[in-house]
Length: 224
Image (cartoon, rainbow, N blue to C red; front, side, top):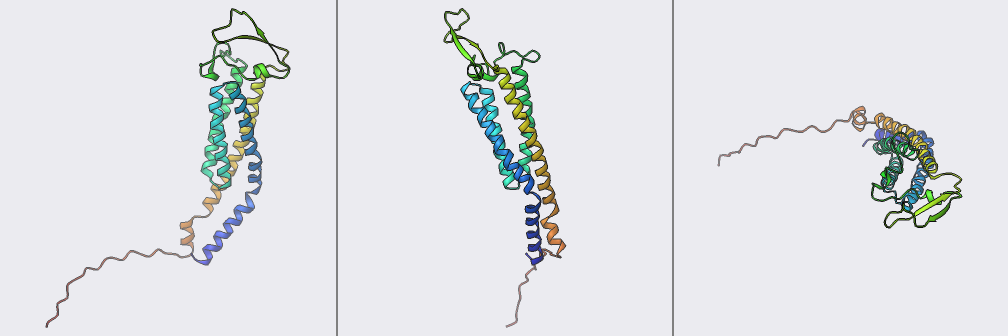
């Protein structure tokens, strides 16, 4: 590697260091917050036995880790995968909002999608919301086997609205992360295209050694 090529490599490193700090700092501030928000939501979904959101939250946390790794290691492909997942994440949270607000034909009393129809558990916020007072209903005819009926009153905010607000926050964070991922991956791709190692060698007149043809060996006879 000639001194000119080494100088260009150093210049490329300086360019990455001088152009990307703003989005990188923004990403370092946003991605951990997005991960913490997803982890907080995962805890409450575990407490409420909401298996579908638990699976989705786990995949989202893995995608956030992938986005952090792609930002630190200048890997545009990882950021593109992270941005693609965010599109699905926004759609999932939009569905949760529609489910808890019972938009269209969705019904919480009939559809137990969040538990994969394996139990009758509802959101953890149903009994533990702000100001909620839980009163057991004894000898209720509505109680199924191994289940009990409760009455929840006095809630300052009903659990469907808490779940909808939580999903709306996730959508907001996802939109911000999508813009960040698209911008930074574009910067990384432009930097990768601006320096081509093959083109760099050619620009300095570097030529690879050509393959020489094998000589055919002939026996040499000498007269004795």
